Amino acid sequence: MGTVSERVEAGRSFEEAVSYAVGHRIRVEIIVALHDLDTASAIELSRIVHQPLSTVTHHLRELLKAGSIHIDRTEKVKSVNQHYYRLINPLFYTDEEMQALSEEERKEVTRVVLQGVTAEALASFWAGYLHDDPRSFLGWNWFNVDAQGRGEIADEQAKSWRRIREIEKEAAARCEESGEERTSIVVAGLSFRRSRPAARRENEGFDAW
Image (cartoon, rainbow, N blue to C red; front, side, top):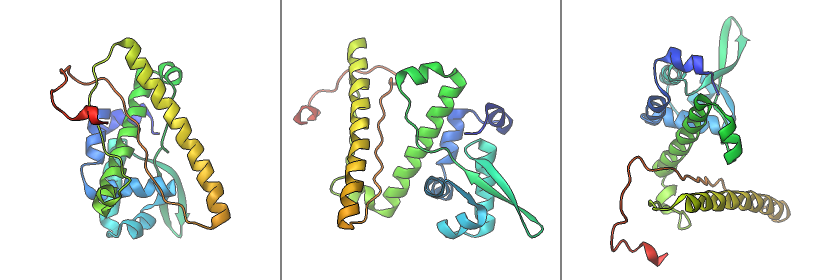
């Protein structure tokens, strides 16, 4: 996922790197394309995002400087060194695994997830899917809970994530039999401490859920 030293050399903090990576449409499209391809050259990305090679190369250079991507490998093509770029795949860490990481590693994991989720959401919105799919789920709110409640929410999200993985396997089996083409669905689960406390607003209509 790129080293901490690479981030320091870039001169941007983890927080700045996230906002920078998703702050331009072409950079967002590059990130989403790399989610699909795992690794790709500037030429391949130029074809996918339908932008001139010089433009894509510029944004790749900026993403590298920000520490948002890294060079996976370099191949000699005729007399030119061709770089292949990589992002980190979507991640899931248990509470225990996250606690075992250093503070810098936890920041890096957070950056990768936020960058990926934001890029995918923006790309889907621009493509018209986020608001036109009747089964899209768009909802957020804050909840004021105690320590036990915080733990119960985290456990519930982990349980939901495991069930979603099971659903994917079940869908793959059905499609194998029916020949139906599968659809890529982004499922994001976030729960985090809010930057400042706030009382529950009245008459939100939230209880209707």
